[in-house]
Length: 444
Image (cartoon, rainbow, N blue to C red; front, side, top):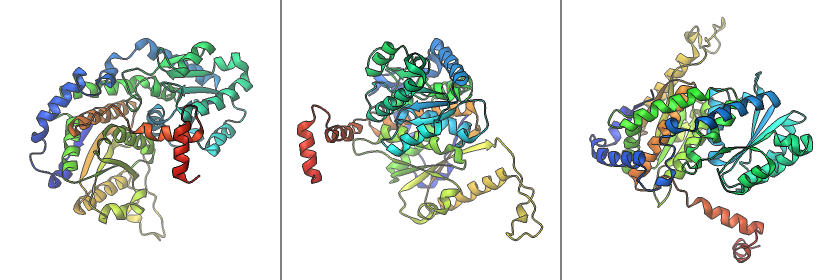
């Protein structure tokens, strides 16, 4: 079970910070469990590990097996919550170098998360003459980045396999009943999976949104859901022993004591995109009404040689949350060197996990002494079940944190501002007046 250690923030917050928040946490808990709080239309993820659609789950596994048999590559098209969770899980459990490894499962290419010509072209070049399938993920089908990418790769697919062949290789994860992508999928005969109405994008990794690409990589999605179910039961009980309560309370207290930035750190490079998923989860959920911690991330120990200086001695506006695994997946011993030119023979024979552990502890002590509180989130190991626990833990703690902050954790009204400007500048019909005004502001 995920554990949270808050002792390294105790010197920075009042001693009674948790008890002062127990009533508010109880209220937030009730809002999540009973779907009675603000944004309650989007709390379907709360009981998802118990109530998920078993029939669709079986179809996801069957589709994953079909993709594995048919294709050497899968193009996953989506942006934000439609791809970050899946990519985070795949890289954390398989490898950031997944596509370069020898394996029996298809390469995964993530598209539709940028408007870069070079990025889109490169994916097509990397696929080359390989057989490929597509999983397009969009509730509406009209979000600009994935919609353009889907046009591009759908055309490639139809040119390579014809319309009939492409129909067997395109999978749409979208709204159950409505939207452009749903209508197109029904007309063309694509197999579809559901983005639940009650689950927002950033909370959707344990739905078909994340599960299909994750399953294609050979990850055990049954274990992933079992881990999430374990954490769901723990969070439903709540109380002082609940790790989500502990994390939410500590974050709230540190924020009220003047900390404005939360840095998520891990000593495993494979965790990088889990941190990207976490940044969206907390940034979109809390950053509104002029409130909220700014979520940032670092990769240790690499970033200790770059951002480490600022963290140690820069402005004291941050705290760290460090994800630690108790058991490494592999072992590697430091070799003995006869010449000992680097002076490291004192480490010869020791496992690299031991060296990494001492780096974690040494960094923690230095940062705390330098005025940077640390929260430790511990998992037993980096596997599918613990990943399921970790995902649900962060999601539930995020819901609690948003309610403690006094915001709706399940909307994102600010995201629409740039889209309106972009549509106007692109010349979308209906935005003509706005376009003229924007061009004048830009001096064009």
